[in-house]
Image (cartoon, rainbow, N blue to C red; front, side, top):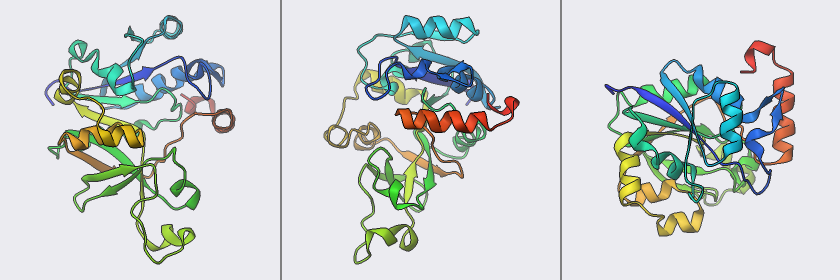
Amino acid sequence: MEKGAIAVIPARLQSVRLPRKVLVDIAGKPMIQHVYERTSLAQSIQHVLIATDSEDVARVAQDWGGAVTLTAANLPSGTARIASIVDEIDAEIVVNVQGDQPLVEPELIDELVRSFKNSKADIVTPVFRITQVSDLIDPGIAKVVRGKDGRALYFSRSPIPYVRDVPLAEWPKRATLWAQHGIYGFRRYVLQDFNASLSPSELERAEKLEQLSFLEAGYSIYTIKTKFRQIAVDTAEDLAHVRHILASRPQQESG
């Protein structure tokens, strides 16, 4: 880790369920600014960069002094957007922080970066314990099966593992079930390989989970347990929920 760690926030302006969501106002700031400022609080991160295909996002970010770079418009994912600029990145570890997580925890980013020091993992991602059936059956939450050493064995939008002979409502009480938090840490070479040769695998095309392409290609993805759960803004209801949370926090805590 001689070159340290940076965070990149991929920010696509057009989204299906909540148009232009990265620029929606939350507590007097565009959502992407909350993500940027909270990510910047992580002590392990040397630099934060927004990667976007939108001149509007770039202009708004520059207005508050955010670092931003423009990418091609026809990229299929946030990881692809980061990989497209990896040659401009001078860091050994690259953390992908999604642009729709205005409540992202700086401590979680630090935990993720620290985990690379004691691991040979290619990719690291946090996981949190599933305690509610509503999370278990939500296809928007990626579930993960882990090895004893924390290595990810499989990700799915379906409830996994299957708990045989137990009613679904009892699964969280009868088994240890995990969900993925939508942040990744990559070693730089993984993103370089992504550009060079990695294409969506059959499993990724089926589940619409890009981490499956990495697993199929032989990369190791290690998981770290966290007390934080993901709060992302995908819908108008999510937006109202996040606005309520930030409105109830002291001003200095809202990013």
